[in-house]
Length: 194
Image 1 (cartoon, rainbow, N blue to C red):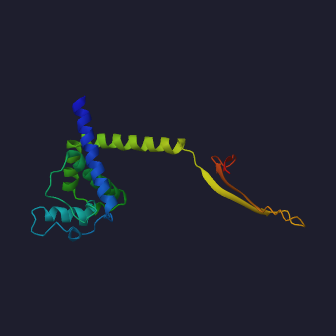
Image 2 (image 1 turned 90 degrees about the vertical axis):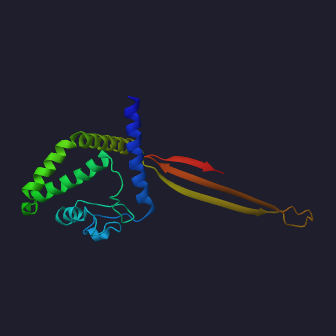
Image 3 (image 1 turned 90 degrees about the horizontal axis):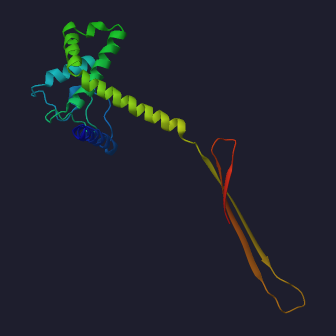
């Protein structure tokens, strides 16, 4: 049980690291050519395979810094996520009657990969479902607030003017800030600072 939690933490840490990379730089959308990757050269041994995946199926995306990072180790979860993206893209191509793009050999290979990584794919689906369920619960249970700031300032100068030489000029003020908050649109909570 402890080893499973450690593995889950490592996977979550990798996902968080990938997400944080996207927040620091402009994220890279789906690539349309292998030449968009700064670290993929035509002399690389996997160049043709990457080129085929990008140009025929459009199912390869890189890191936000325009790199593919093909020379580093890849976890089974990362591979399963990439495989899932390719499977979804192939299914789209089949559904839109562009089956001429998908060869029988590619379908056989994808089926074999899908069987090999079925455990990881279902784990990812389970995690995505869990995140979506938590997100839906947060959205359903959150309250939406609208707060308006209303202010009032009153200043007054008073004195007793007349024949009397005992003038006592007084400066007075009253300042109020009123925060009017509505949670449902039919209610109002007043928070007043005076």
